[in-house]
Length: 383
Ligand code: ATP
Ligand code: MG
Ligand code: MG
Image (cartoon, rainbow, N blue to C red; front, side, top):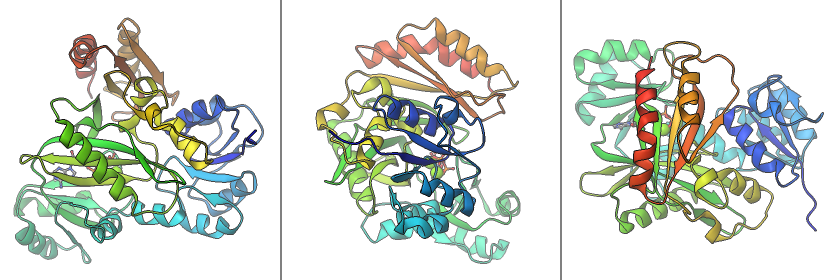
C-alpha cells in the first residue's frame, strides 16, 4: 500500500481549496501556507497549516519542515525561498520552472528556444515614451503592453491603440517591469490543461475560453466548432510547451486560434487553472485529482482525463455590489445539471472570482440552452 505523503501548498485561495477537496478524498493531508481562515484552510481541519504568506521566506521554510512535497496554487511565490529549501523537500513543479514562468517575458524567451509559436514581442528597459514609441513602430498598433510580473486577470495588460495612448499606458503600468506584444488577431481563445508526470506529459481535451474585460468568463469543453485536427494540434502544442519545464503537476496553457487556423501560445501557468475547473464534473479525474496524483507519483489512467460529457463553466465574479454574486448563485440553484462551487472568500469586490458553476449535458447545444438564463443574470449584475 502507498503511504499517503503530506503535501504543502503555497496559497490557500480557491485553487488551493479545490486541491484540498481532491486530496481529502485520498486521505492526503495538505498543509496550507496562507492567512488564517483562507478558503483552503476552511475545509481542512488539522494542526499542520502555516499562517503567513507564500511571499515570506520564513513562512516557506516553516512549511517545508512540515511536509514531504511542496506545490503551489499560484506562480507569484518566493522562488528564492523555494530554492533554499530544495535540499530538504521536493517541490513540484520545480522552483526553476516557477521562476521562469512567473516572469512572462522570461517565460516567452525560454519557450522561444523550443520553437513554440508566440506573438512577436519586445522588452522595454527604460519604460520611456520614446522607447515605447520605437517598439510601436516595430510591432504596429494596436499592441499589448504587459507587465512581466505579478500579472493576473488582465491586471498588468494595457492595450495601446496608437502612439497617442503611450503616456496613459505607461502611467497605468508605472513602476512595473514591462514588455510589449504584437496584437494577436485571434478568432477564438483555446486552453489545454497539461499534466507532467514522472513518465511524460498528458493532456486534457482542448477547451474554448471566453474572457470579458480580460477575465475568464466562460469555458466550453470541448471547444465549439473546432475540428479534431485543431484539438489534437492544441494538445500537442501544450504538451510540447510544458515539456520545456522541469517538475511535475498541472500546467494551464492558454492559446490563440488565429484566422488561418494556426495556433499561438498566449501564456502558461505553472499550476491548476481556471480553464480546467470543468474537469471536476466533465472527467473522471479532475485537474485537481491529476495534479495531486502527478506530484506524489500515483497513476493517472489516460482514459480518466478524457471528456465524459460536454460541459460549460461560468465564473461567478464580484459585481456592482458586495452581494451581487449571491444573486447569480441563487439563480444557479434552479438550473438543471448545474454544479455550484463557491469559494467562501467573504465579501465580493468587482472583478474578484467568487465561485463558478458548471453545467453538463448530453450535447453542447443542450448545455448552452440550459446555462443561458444564468449567463443573462451574470451579465445583468456586472459592475
Ligand atoms: P491570466 O488571468 O490568464 O493570468 P494575464 O493577466 O496573465 O491573465 P494574459 O493572459 O496575458 O493576461 O492576457 C489576458 C487576455 O488579454 C488574453 O486572454 C487575451 O484575451 C488578451 N490578450 C493578451 N495578449 C494579447 C495579444 N498579444 N493580442 C491580443 N489580445 C491579447
Ligand atoms: Mg497570466
Ligand atoms: Mg492569461
